Image (cartoon, rainbow, N blue to C red; front, side, top):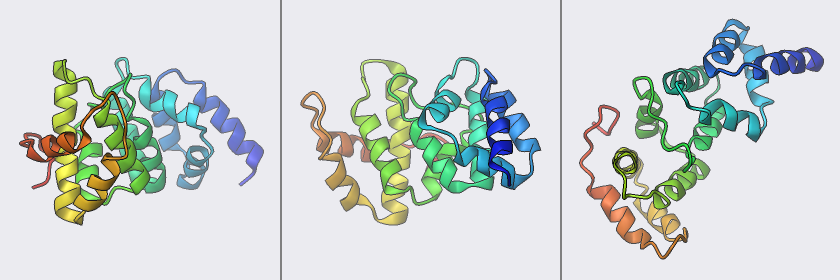
Length: 185
């Protein structure tokens, strides 16, 4: 595939303000072209697509599911970018992106970013508590399905933030009652 053609398409698609438009046009392309555009996205491109959330949460979730179907590596790279303390956890669509995180083995770098995200949550507000509980479902699933307690325990303790006792954070995550349909069944 001609690299100039891909760059031209990418430039056109990245000019879209809304992730919905970006996703719709991307999904109309042959899969190989869509994958090349996705693979050429910079960290800034990804951040804009998954964290400019105003009125777009459902569309971003749909876009992530499209990525899962055509390029799981791109899905993990972009889901990792959604763990943004300014934007919060992505709540959108039917939460299939979180279900995947409960059902599939999360790559180490993505799980480490999720742990960092949860340690930095300000649990003084209701939405942060909901984020915490949802992440608890994911952490419990990773422990139960993939025997990752040791890895998670060792790595969460490496995260330093405002004297937070990360071992207590992990215990609270494990003790969460998963009330969401995307949790570990």
